[in-house]
Length: 256
Ligand code: OOG
Ligand code: MG
Image (cartoon, rainbow, N blue to C red; front, side):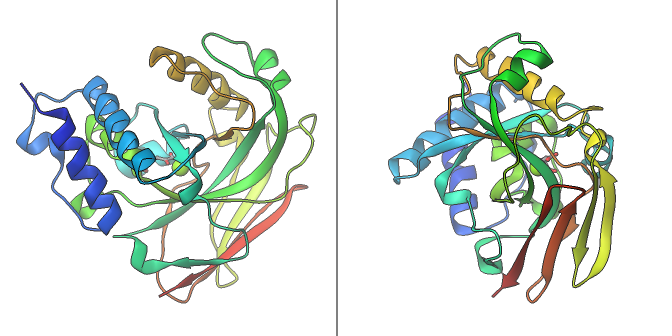
């Protein structure tokens, strides 16, 4: 039988020490996505034991651009902790990561719990605020290559995130133009509509997916809807900025 706790230790250590590892499914071809989620939960317990605190959840692979970039066409999710949040406008330390990439996202702040099958209207009624966001993804696997089971086991590549200014939830977020720039040069241009046609669908999916694992989205949680465009590789010295029409912009600098 596969030792899931051992595999959780391997991905967690790879993440903690920023060291690339071979895909888990190479040595363990029997692993499926449900095993990936079991590994993820065990890896999460290790983070809690180190003092990290749960602050929300991220959805991944919710836009076509993202699915095509990594060659996996199923959604994935992961639990966010306080240690992953970096202050907007701050410095992201490159040495914490293996081969980091940045992607533009949209974030929801919840004021009510959500779990199971909910409608888009019910999901929005649980939202306190919405904000432009950026996620730093850093697959622990060599060459950023993985299967669905691998990526789920590895935090869904999650490693850090930035949140911009919160707006009230009645703002129409269905089709907000966005530009992600590196050193004032646009590297990705897109729209929030790329996220499942409307980012609220990602929140609806998030409520459904956590329920499968006996969890709910809690008041105060941040839920990241997933990259609206392909991700862009990061290197030391870059100044990265994402602007979302009518929602302001957020930025960071890549340090050593
Ligand atoms: C997987 C994580 C996907 C997103 O927003 O789609 C993700 C990856 O691209 O490495 O975070
Ligand atoms: Mg993402």
